[in-house]
Image 1 (cartoon, protein in one colour):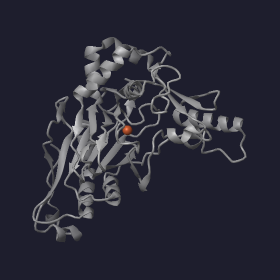
Image 2 (spheres, rainbow, N blue to C red):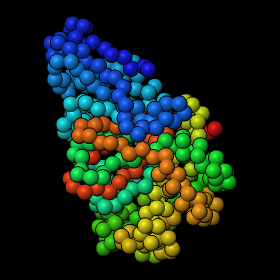
Image 3 (cartoon, rainbow, N blue to C red):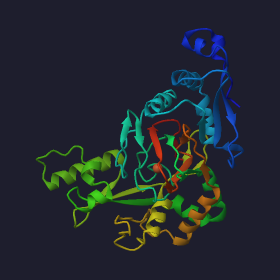
Image 4 (spheres, rainbow, N blue to C red):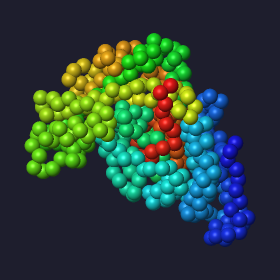
Length: 379
Ligand SMILES: [Fe+2]
């Protein structure tokens, strides 16, 4: 175990020496009920802040994280465990959370391109999680796994825990790959050989449906558009953004909506470990389409939204039997984060998929997305 107890008081310098002189500030592993073991490592790993005889403030706690981050402790743990659940840190609001995430010194905050969800910025680098209603279930997905532009690191901060539900299910996408390879080798072979084409529906901004859908091509991709631009110029600028930032193609529809097509691998390899990982988001696309009775063209669901199917990379359909089994296996290997107020989960997006369960009551979950940590390689 790379985590070591550091006695900040014994250093005898700085304000922390005063604050913690009666106790030892330590970050130590704790057991999480029903956690799993993946490739011989706990998933997730729980780390708890402990301080004897004294209350720790956020600045002291952050300094502790900085010290450990400087030694590369968290990066190593993240590669081994995929997710770290931090508990017992004095994080009570978005500003505390901001200080906490910055302490890890990941290279860059991630800039989202093509957001297809509702988020509100509450502090620099901190946003609300997707604001869709509490009864909407999210299936497992890699964050922006449908896109060529995705974050490497996700932080989730549980600010308010609802009366029931509202967990964040997690699974190891390394374990998911292993299970699929064992049970559905032809599926894994087809995915490997063909990749997938994800499709997303973006209405025109003026379309009355756009507000209900929650996004539109003008706001998601049209940041170069000027007020005087005609439709053809607007389309050309959107297409250029798609090409340059996402290597994606746009297909304009008769109602002036846009289908964004993203041809990507569904299985990739982690460069530092050479392990294959199931990195994509199409199980969720299928699950929501099925639940909303949107499996047939024009793919408009009971929720009034469009659920365009992901196909194999040659345009052929992915058999429903595979997709159904994929959802079942995901549930079998999933782990529900037992949120307590103040908890923060640090997630390696390359090796862990997340989901969201419906809830009753008030809930606040904040997110912070960062680039960096792992890379994908060709093999
Ligand atoms: Fe997500």
